[in-house]
Length: 256
Ligand code: 13P
Image (cartoon, rainbow, N blue to C red; front, side, top):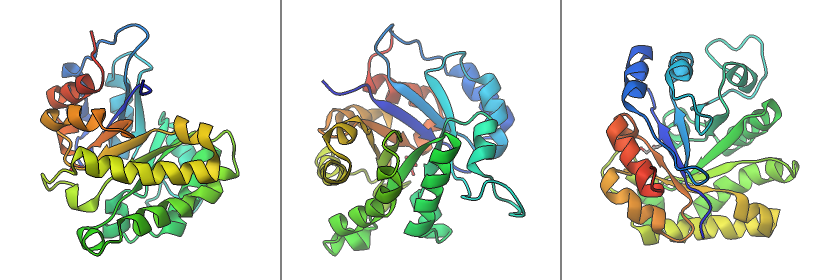
């Protein structure tokens, strides 16, 4: 049986504190005892405190940040460190989201430094990888996603206790309504899993959730979540609506 799924919502640059409070007024997952999905929500930094106050009193709904800087503190105007994010109540952080890579020019080495900083501060990194349409059409899917994964593996293999999550988000499927098929997702996740097995061993590879992201909606979530090697989903647009996000969570595992 698959481990319990991780259902994650990336709010991106949306949702002010008031909107977050409204979201959680409508978002009431009722978990079955024992078996439940892990729910993660990534609000903008400025909304984290409001979301923490407003979320259900349930440790199964956790909050993370969408990005961190690798230094711990100092003269880095506009940046937020992993230490600050952890102190503010985040438990997870996205790292290397394709919008960070493609809009803000983040490189593989930056992603690796951020993963190291997250682990040191006690945040679980959610490392995002994914190919562009051009790379996919050029037959470079495997090369690109394994290069992105390889960049962070030295940091992860140095710390045998490090818990982390991977997210495969093909750039061509993000915000486009174009979803990878369950087979596409399984194929890419299989490549990532095999690399984890080679570098970190079978146990850690099996324990690491690999999420799919890119136009996940209530009507395609169930088939994606059933696909081999897919351990959860990272949802953008559809996570802004409490009813849609709840429907996606239910697709992962029946709530009561
Ligand atoms: P969409 O679900 O809006 O395509 O966004 C996916 C994503 O980038 C999640 O991190």
